[in-house]
Image (cartoon, rainbow, N blue to C red; front, side):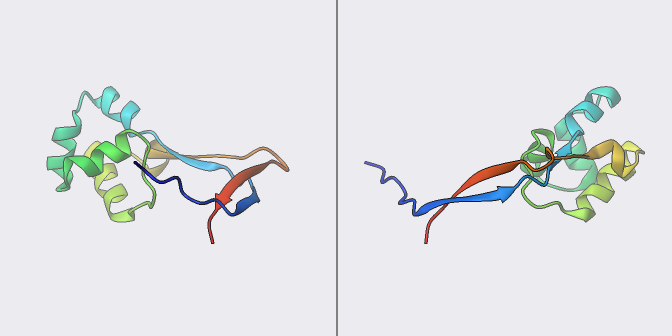
Amino acid sequence: MQKKPKIDGIIYVRDYGRINIKLAELLQQHHISRNYLARAINVRFEVVDKWYNNKVEKLDLDILARVCAVLECDVTDVIEYVAGEEGAMRETLFNS
């Protein structure tokens, strides 16, 4: 039986917005598979898959540069900033 994590409380954090990775759109436009891109930029498929599914937690600038070089595109073609709502807050659960 899986234990539920103990939650000590909720904090409210300003919504600063988010970064979207648009790799899926780019690969479709270029008719390139995730496997091909992974081989071309010399990384594991799982790395490209995280970028493809917009699940990257920390942005690796070296990988971003490789993607831009292979796809012959600009950084702004791969990532975009989506602003948060003015004055919006989001809840974050925390454990001590």
